[in-house]
Length: 89
Image (tube, rainbow, N blue to C red; front, side, top):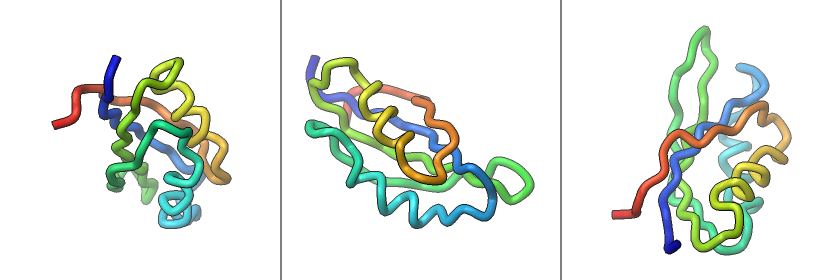
């Protein structure tokens, strides 16, 4: 399959949640064979912001699913959704 870059939208469980704390934990929970390339914040509504993480996913069994499941285990993460998958540039 080769490496793919996945853009993953991570929703916190509320506006009070510290997004910097969640960002700091993402790289530590990723399965072997995947690597965090960067994060950004996207305003949603009423002060709520989502984290958009770009993750390089190698030849993992199950594609991006193990990455999604790992990120979902972080305290304060309510929802994880892959928005885009493509070849890295």
